[in-house]
Length: 356
Ligand code: CA
Image 1 (tube, rainbow, N blue to C red):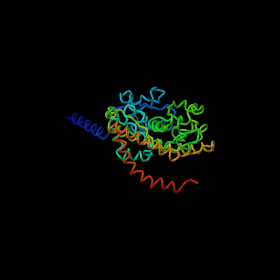
Image 2: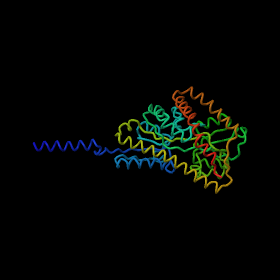
Image 3: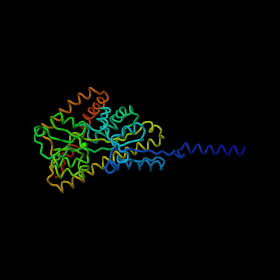
Image 4: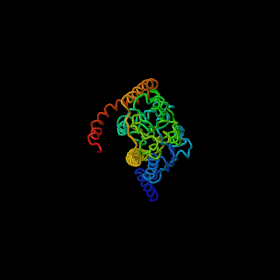
């Protein structure tokens, strides 16, 4: 009798412990594949911080090993590796998958589209996250915001651009949809591996290129050979992405799901903030060492031609893919409202308080 009582007590204690979350979590060991090489900051740091946060918050029971592209050798294979479960998750950019499905393109950034802050407002509070998962669930994955570059610069040009004529036959490295927009108005568009960009620009194989912004451009050295630095239009707020295998995510405990979600969200915001700080520092340094750099804005007729080309291409693309149309129209609708507020708030404040 006394033995039975003791046994009941032991079971009761065990039950209370497990129900209150004291039971040890089953160890979860995940692997993440990045599109990036091991030194591309601030991308790599943000991903590693995310993994470190998951490990700490889970008390070491949930760990994520981060592999850069030199390890897995497939920078643009991240989509397929996560989809097939060879990797549990990845870090990349959605627009790389536009060849698989056009609806992935606007989930990074669109020319003349949302800024970084507007992008986060759309993703978290404007229906963006649901639309993103509508596209990725079809491929056995979830996609979460993975950090933003902020407004990207229009690129480094060897010569000043005064008219549309100056752009005819101009050879520029500008990948993706923005490249199509420019090809439509007379440029010769190429894509060149990052490691060969500096030499190509120096030797005149190309006349211009775009990369990101001062923070990520400075180490590439373009400012030493192409002094005209044009302001942005084509990637106003490029959002990177965390890709997660859907089945693997569903197998996580509720606690680990929440730990992962929070760690990814913090990492994304951190990367956005770090990009901002890196660009402020890098620009300060660039202009001090190379005072001949000129920050330029494309002349109005050039901007108008780019916008027209963009709008024409969009009409065709919307007709081809219903989900692409749904996502782009959701962004357009959101942008109309959000931009009024951006103009009344940050834009007006900055315009009225310019640095002397
Ligand atoms: Ca870019």
